Image (cartoon, rainbow, N blue to C red; front, top):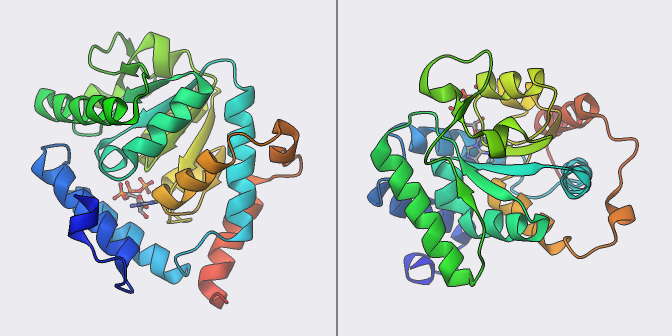
Length: 247
Ligand code: ATP
């Protein structure tokens, strides 16, 4: 489908491909009505950042990957947009880290949960990988959040020490940080509440970031170490890049 949808010679190929994945995700019932608006906001920031991985983003990505590899109970959280755009990369990462994916969505309906879990299972089969997919039957709650947004599993999100939450909303990010977890956010908007709240914020397009992180998986752990990483400095560098323009 990806190949049919976009012509690789088109200058906006990567962007068109991502839009197509969102269309497929919507057709499969995986996305909330506002998902395309969130995607559009991401595209705008990606444009301003030159649609590339900057050196400061690479440092955040290396630091995040090192933390995930060293974690006792890592977990990767998946929402509708992440499932539509980056299911394969999330599955590869979870497989390498030997951890679970947990489907955790803002507007939880049984139909959307089923569609997202079905899509992840389909991609696991396609990749020939077997990764636990949690979230269907939540048995825990994230303290400090109201309603269905608090629902999670004890064996996944609740007991995790390091959690990757690409495209998370600000409140949930803050609640996870307040639980003492290392929260790794992927968000193209360095000013969003999630970006500001996260322990490690990767300001990069989610597929671009995860593809690179998957490519680093076999590197020596020491080479992933970024002992001087500071999230607030990384965020400042991102906003500086937007203000001053990029090369
Ligand atoms: P917050 O609560 O964190 O302040 P928000 O809830 O208002 O933010 P949303 O409307 O949920 O933000 O938008 C989703 C966020 O995800 C935006 O900040 C957008 O820049 C980012 N985003 C969207 N698509 C991508 C993508 N493909 N890669 C990385 N980030 C993305």
